[in-house]
Length: 502
Image (tube, rainbow, N blue to C red; front, side):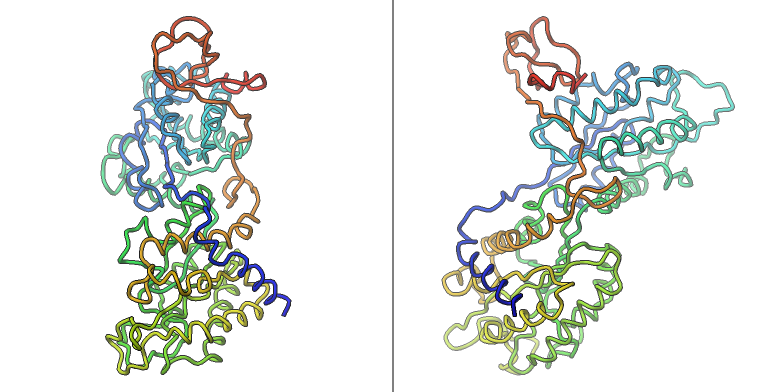
């Protein structure tokens, strides 16, 4: 009873105000891929389509080294200024392969220092990017033969560079993506033993980076029906996508909506056998188990709310079965957020939503059931599973009545409705999902990021500006105390941040 009272007080407080009051800005996440030849070859494009981002901008620089003294140092490539101008939320760094050349590794004593300085420089951006240290792909050169000073060496990568990167990431709290160990047996993907230009090779690398990103993200998986799937809206307009944009760079939100699906395990009268209860959909259930979510939101019940189908005891029992099946067989144990269903409206005495595919008029989606039976049933379910259920999201109260314009067919929210739903969900979820704290690299963590002091970035537009006047350093960390500055992006240290970029 206390749970229900607390839920009612909290949910009543957000009410209609949740729609009109500004929430976290829904902005597409930006990813910058720093790297050298393997990055240039194109794997970022194969990762991009899997993520809630417009794209991953490729800032690869063939032959680029993390060492400042390298024969083709990334520091002096001009790419850093471009990355600063982009202000990404996520940055992957795939450097180290070209550092293994004997001409470069002669300065190996400075590798850790220079790589950490690069991370510190990137972390100083106002966007406070999430950093991912990507281990270099293998190199299969026969090192028993004489090696030219400009050839990469697999033994140096495996025995020196990868262990150093592992420790650097740990020291800086950065995430990691391993493109070395998983590809040791995949030499056929690399035509020249260094880079891959094939779709299969690029896709393999992109998939490994994507999985590493997921493994170290807070995973929110959204179970639902057609309102969640939202096929009539563009991907960026769907509430799942917009929720991901609001939660930010440390989260991954999966759209598990399936049009027509319901909660009760019985077959809906008159429905085609191709329509089913969510719990009987093996591919969707397998995906839930495979991705090991930290949070599962459940927006099911709209299709259950039909006069000839709705049975409150059965709905509650099957909903509990759904939660228990996932919770008792998953590691880590997920937390659940049931949604009270979005309203449905009558139009001229009939249900606005088409009954196509069902045998009787009574099988139309029923707004009264959603209001009077489904909502209270969700409260009962939440109270019966206090360990599993972290909170209830009320999508009924904020949208009942005057917001019918969001759903012209009486059931499905339009783009404005999807955006408003995302804001209501975000407000309810935020204090819950942020309860996960920093962990070691390789673990999901919202706060695992390099602990560096802030520096400001400034853009120099005029070639007449001098370093002395602007008080800046170049983005490669070198002194800019003398002479006229070229246009570009520079760092402006505060009194206590002079050493950040050295």
